[in-house]
Length: 250
Image 1 (cartoon, rainbow, N blue to C red):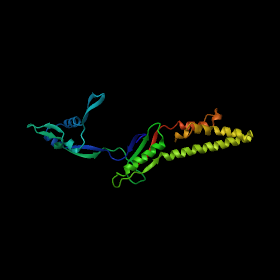
Image 2 (image 1 turned 90 degrees about the vertical axis):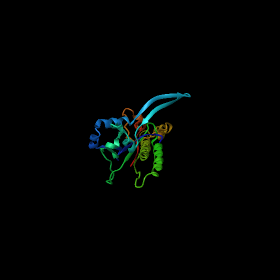
Image 3 (image 1 turned 45 degrees about the vertical axis):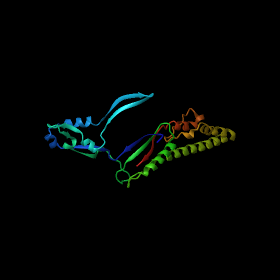
Image 4 (image 1 turned 30 degrees about the vertical axis):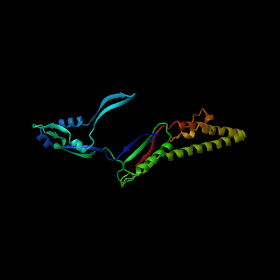
């Protein structure tokens, strides 16, 4: 998905291949335990072979030797008998799928375990646009889910962005009205109040600040800059958000 840097997943079980060695069979073939580890490591690796240049194009050469099934692991040769007969992993061990030892779990609403995925946005992207792309992709994935598996969105940054923009607009409106009222009472000039109150609004529109969204609280402006009372909080807010958690599903 354009604009997404990664998806961090939590919970669930990680599929691994487990080799359960029978010590009696290992002893019967007179094979040390270290030999099993050496054979598994040697038969499960990739090797680089530099590159080949042809027609002004560069082709990378790589030898892939990763195992991808239980049968391939079981057919790894450990050694050979006195008569030359090869001894395989499945002759001394049982290979099966098993989850990795877990160090935690994810639950929600006391309904049992769940798997959580947090979509991380690329720095400089528009969160509203990226969230819309993620939603479209989720709808495509939803069609291929097995029976009983659902995707539920529990955190959506677009709602946060909408509330942030509404807060900025509300603060600008209330601040402008307050400035006009104060200048009208003290100076008796409605025109002066309108000019002062309109400056932050013009900056807001001319600089395209609506294209940058934020979610962190604004920092109050310095007291020695009263002339920028309305503009400073907005500028500080716009500088605080750069990427971060964007979308979370479960």
